[in-house]
Each structure stands twice: as C-alpha cells, then as structure tokens.
Length: 188
Image (cartoon, rainbow, N blue to C red; front, side, top):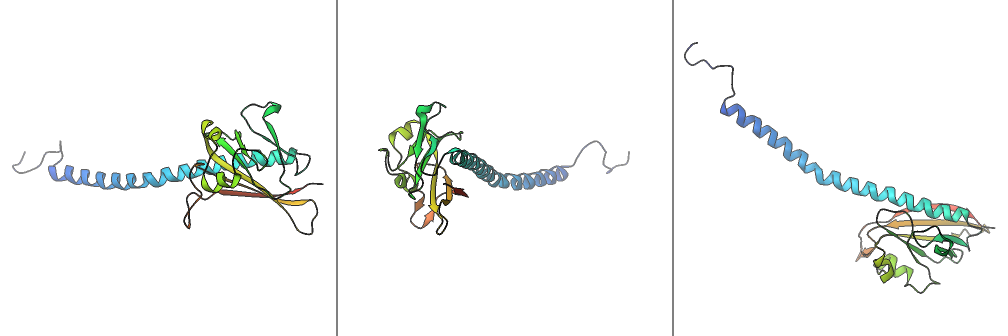
C-alpha cells in the first residue's frame, strides 16, 4: 500500500458531516409538512362526519309523512321515546347535537322545547347543561324554506359545525365554517 492512499473500508469525517447535513435538511422539510398533513386529516374527518350527519337528517326527512312532522331521534337508543317530531314548515331552525365520534343525535334544540334557544346554541355555542353532560361536540342545524310559487316544495338546508361550544362568529371572523348541504323536498 502506498503512502497517502486511502483505504476503502471507511468514510472520512467530511463525508459523514455532509451526509448528516443532507439528512437533517430533508428531515426538517418532512417535519415541516407534518402540521399541514395533520390539519388536512382533521378537516377531512370533520367533513366525513358532517356527511354522515346530513345523511341521517335527510333520511329522517324522507321517511317523514310531511315537513311539519319530521321524526328526529333525540337519544342513543332506537326506542320510540327518543323520537321527537319537529316542524320545519314554519321556517324555524332546529339544532341537533351529536356526541363525539357518532352520527346519532343525542340532544335537540327546537323552539317548542324548553332547552334553550336554537340560535344561541348554533351561533354562540351556548349549550344546555344536558347537552354538555352528554358530551355534545358537534351541532347540525336543519331548516327549510318554501319555494315561492311552488306549493309544497321546500328547500332544506343542513349545516354541520364543530366544536359545538365555541361561538360560530367572533367579530367578523368565522371560527370554523359549517359544512352545508341542501336538497329539495316535496310535502303534500
């Protein structure tokens, strides 16, 4: 072996330092993407749950005899005592509360019930103590408007938002905008 020639069995300190520097540069870039990926995952989960909730409410609407007698569940069981009749023909808002990780309603704000104002729950995040006790974390607001000149034809909106206990509006800014669904419904 000649003097000054390098063996093939190892790496020089400069090579190791450059390799660590490249690895650190790539790792910092990948870690920088992690918060955006986590936010995208949370937004996607929220939207999937919103679709499930809207589907539940639209199914209740389709199964009802009329828009003035929509049967909505107000509790975890499928027993008749948990079914509440709501009237959407008058243009009032009904707010339905959902506990974490479910699309089954567990609490209902209706103008005819004495459990607080539906608009206060929806806009201000002011939840009834019973809703808080049931762990309500998502709200859905269902409303209908008769289409002028079309007797019996209604446009129905379902808006879903989370978290439930945070006011929807803060000044001029929307905290977490609701996911909105709409359909047409004919009620004889």
